[in-house]
Image (cartoon, rainbow over all chains, first blue to last red; front, side, top):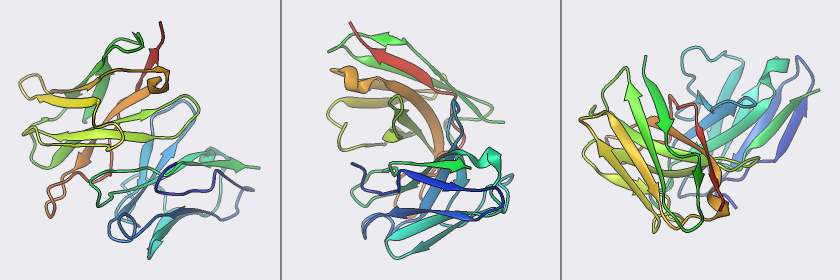
Length: 109
Length: 126
């Protein structure tokens, strides 16, 4: 049971916009940055969003992050088949730990 | 560019100690800007942060694993290592090493892990 809560699954059709939520508390999301990772099947996770809403170089601007209070969201616009992957949120927790969310499996229909 | 590579036994017996090493190439582990971390992923499950170490030896551990985990650094070899004691089948997982930024305000690691090693599967079984 992670301290960061994500929906186990999400889906969308090509071209659609989908969002994935990440719910936490005042000790993690509420007071620290949120990070998002993409894990394609059989590969190591890749940093997708850092500091709530910043994209590393090479990450398409179809991916965006936002935070409000103790929750955060990852939005993917113009959904493509290659976006089918597992997505994880993470945030530093004031208990001196770095929890990940449970992960959301995105299916492109 | 910076690369990380995990190495160690792929099979560990229950109650024994799991030992893995991460070798860093293309950059120095002694940089003051980074922490070096271990993350694991049981088969079919999500990611779990194990802990992180700074080049000076300062460590942060997942509270749920803290009593069994030791992370150490060898700057002369540009490596850092993980030891997890008293393992059970529940410790079977792909173990990843990764770099993250140093938080200059709090002195703690930031969970912006990048890059990652390719991961190594460790199975706990007799």
